[in-house]
Image (tube, rainbow, N blue to C red; front, side, top):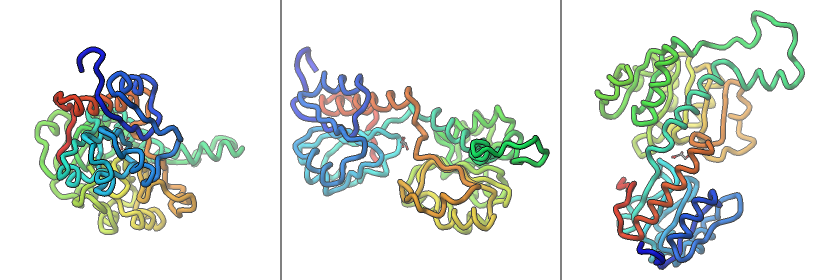
Length: 328
Ligand code: DGY
């Protein structure tokens, strides 16, 4: 915008983001409304605060549907602070001329780190043995104590070789893992770059892998991608790692697989439902390592995501090219 001129209109930001991000919005918008409570606005509060806005800056846990968009006919853009946008009804937004944006290329390496953290934690029993040690049970060294399985040299099956999947593959190279992958479309260039072998059939990949790491977006095609037959296809010594979306895995099937030993364990950062209720039986499984959707949760990456979402909102409201508009 020309000096001193601001975007005439309000942006509603659904979480209290880092001060430099809020300041950047204040520099550009005539009005910035920030949701101060720690938790998210309820759907009714979200609709009330969005009404009359030109821009909305959302999190992955905010549902943006036709009803919300209808409550805000002045809205030009929904800038989602996430690479995934399954929380947004893209068709409803397109029908109303509302631009939707996401935050790619700033969080992939951080999320790949998390997938590896879960892989190492569950295979080497880091969480179980930490809890036991804190409980005062560190007895004399014993050759059979807390035995796990090797990550190095194992076969990693990656489902979805996009930017996060390939970042996981690069890390796996450093652990001397055999890397295999499946994807809707073969990624010849990427597979050559990361040294991965393409396995066209998902169940074949599952049967060949010691670790299976999921890196697909949530769509109608990937919902419940991993269910009872897929767990049956996995080795009983294998581990499932999920940093994508909870709904890609059927929760009942995961629970059964962990309970009856169909797989050795799982490391999951996402669940269905999310958040997982505190009395959910999954939380009783000692062969599960679980974290509360922390894939991109580092100081540096969260600032980058928030700033990118802010830039997307500003661009969409000033008529500048929008860096990360998504179309579905
Ligand atoms: C994303 O970017 O989609 C993550 O799940 C949110 O951190």
